Length: 229
Length: 229
DNA sequence: TCAAAAGTGTTGAGCGTACACCCATGC
DNA sequence: GCATGGGTGTACGCTCAACACTTTTGA
Image 1 (cartoon, rainbow over the protein chains, first blue to last red):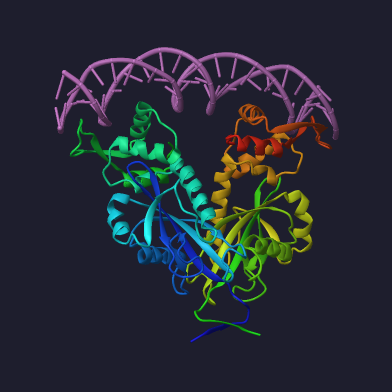
Image 2: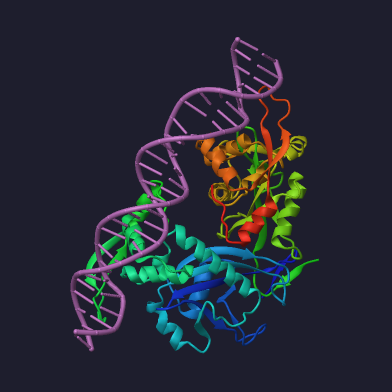
């Protein structure tokens, strides 16, 4: 079966830059292509948008199919449409970036490690197509957005310590932060709920666990509040 | 002549939200459609992306063809890909927003006023497709971006008074600003070049004209500076 | 001389930043 | 008891916001 049009049409794809946070590093999920072009090279997960699915649905489907990731934070990044970005034909790609709680998903990546793996963001292999450009834009966006939107919590488990949160910011922004000032600011916003639990199995004083108060955040935003850290 | 593919392909369009600044108001350029669907309704300028042109080229070409605008500031906004956004078939649209110096372009809009016209952003007619959504996202983006990037100058003539600049900010942000604080901040950044000219033909004391120092701004950005107002 | 907008400084409050020590826990 | 990170308060400087009058020019 074929489909015929009066004018030539380019193909449309989605590509996803998936970020996860290791203990010590910000990571990105890459897959190893097993079809030409760029066979054997690493690339961002992604693929063709089907004609009866929305862009975001396509991104989620591809993530699911290629990496096993599901129900992640996903936001549109930019659309790449240079003529020669794919050697085969004209392909326009809508890029998304995703944030995942790596601890939840570590297993998937490991079991399927032959063709999907996490790389430190400073330690990526050379990428197929213009994926290096997409990746670097995503990283820049993440750094900017982290400062004025509470998206960092998407990278942490539901319950986390203030130190974990601080390390997240230090790792992504690549600069040290003062502990007392950080805690003052973050607690001062009133968006963290103190749980009655503490860390387990640590060889020192156990830290208190907090949750992000999503409901309260939404309410405050409607009232004109804007997060900043 | 026809073009045949193995899988069905959606169409790809660009749409442009063009902003201009009147003396008193922020305006948006709309065109009146003279083909179905939505014949006779107002819509954003835009059209199909050709297979051998980049997305930005397509946006510039459509702007030129439909509104006569040329060499404007243009930046990608977002890509809209819901399945039913076009009643005919699947159409994905890459939206751009543009900023123009309205004084330079007022003539074009006027001479071609049957099918292209400026509307106050609070006084727009109902729009075809999902263009109302695109427009409102563009407006939101403009308001945010104005605060931390020097894009406002794109809406003013090359040489402008500090009052014009302040009014621009007041109109777009929709709140009054203190004159002395505004001048202090904006001059304090050192990005305005004082010319030796003043306003002409005003019925009161003529204000000094300034230019934005684009070269210096670029240099500062490379050194880590970030504009904020 | 009047109208209309240009231009100009100071002060107080609140915020961000820098900084060091004791505490709790597990080994 | 010691190593490891958890948790806490203060003081200073700077930036931001509030605020009113004089000057220039053309009509």
